[in-house]
Amino acid sequence: MATSGPGDTQTLGKLVDELLDAAPWLDLGDADFLCRRRHDALDAVVAALTARAAGKKLTLRPRTPAEASAARTQGWIALPLPGSSLSLLP
Image (cartoon, rainbow, N blue to C red; front, side):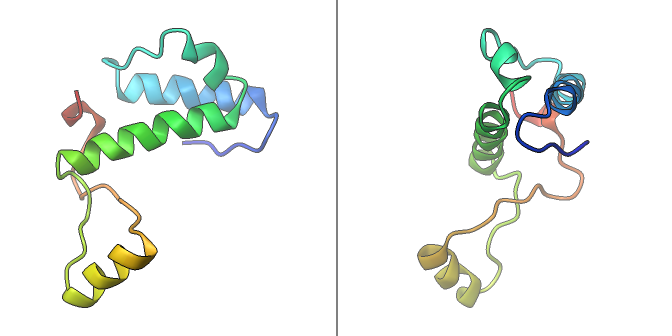
């Protein structure tokens, strides 16, 4: 996927197009317009998809007691499992 900075609507639009191509089941509704113009709106959608993936156990989890302890106090970045796909989220 492309990257975007604040105010870069052309790149944001491309990111939304790529996301919708990867997840044809995703309907942004009225948020589509906002996601193409505001990076924070698109960030919120990505965060929601990540939360869904984590809830379905499609992200990496802490593997050791030390990682679990650190995750409880410092947070954990949910990265997708190898081979996982947006098609597994709906």
